[in-house]
Length: 511
Image (cartoon, rainbow, N blue to C red; front, side, top):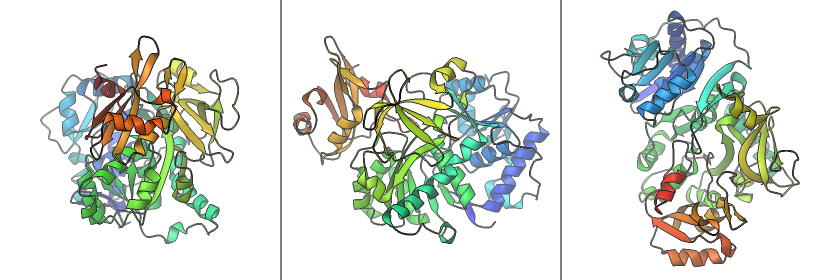
């Protein structure tokens, strides 16, 4: 009803107004001849129009294709061609990047907050400005029968190890995350011996969406659950730490996070103490490795907030394992146990046998959150998906209570003269140094050993390479100590999913 759902700068949009906009999008697509299963590409920043198009297209029976708003023009064209999208919704900046050289399959283009001088029609012709969405006429939901196993989304993987692949999700997989946070909260309460929280009696949860909607973390782990539970989303066009702190103070934000880099950037900002961040109740992150001391730092610096952590991939439709509060603090190196509807197991290298507890192997995942496979890539699908199980490519182990510990990406693990080096172990040790805010380990080619470890460190205060190497010598085996350490004040380079860009890190060493 009249409760606020979306806040973007000076725009405030209620659930009722949002529903009217989403249904108007669905009706417009039907008028334009949308057929069930047609792909609708969505390429824009975090604007209120993004979720309106997302839900509207789903209601009309389309497969929604969220494209990375950071992509260049050719990369966006790749996404349109690969998905064979007939409909495209974009903003003015993405439209300019696309230009006029569009795939022939594209038949209908709409631009949000643009004009009618190019190949796209203004989206405002359908919706009007967000401030007037509440005036849109009452309209019935589309008469489209949707099955839980119908194709619903194509989210492209971040492509850190090759060209992006489209992960084909279903209506069932994209709704699984709705239950992740309530499950984690209930488990925390039961484990500490207290009654589970009454979610119906809670005041409205306010979430600062600091990551892009085109990433499954924001779309499936933030947008979907808040739409279902009546939460409010405060949108940022692009994350910037001080602007985020100002919004947290102004809107009394209760939840934020996304990837560890966001939480770290808040903690490390020189004006951190200038803002009232006491409204925060949960700082949750996933999608990339985090320092093992991050849970304790959240507790120390945000007195009213609990830390949360989880693991997921594009292929798991965001969250697959999760924990928070004491569970996370007691196991800061873990990403939690699997959701109740999911299963995880640790397999040997060829996938023929499950490994005992405590042994490192490849993490496999199973459940309703797992996507069907890769869009139009049968060989890749056969290589990664087996009898409903997803071969994640992550190296991990499990403890006796089912808590998962990610130790590295199988493809990124370093092997120095036959000795395995798990990057997270060394990175976590570096982050224990009081001068280190963030750290990353990479491999550099070596003529004899094959490769040797090198580290890039974001320092919060002066420190030198020899000090860090000596610090590590007391914490990890000698062969794990980096041969070289690059020290910088700027944040480490990450892609839109919060994952480290290994090529940029290697370039710092001339590799």
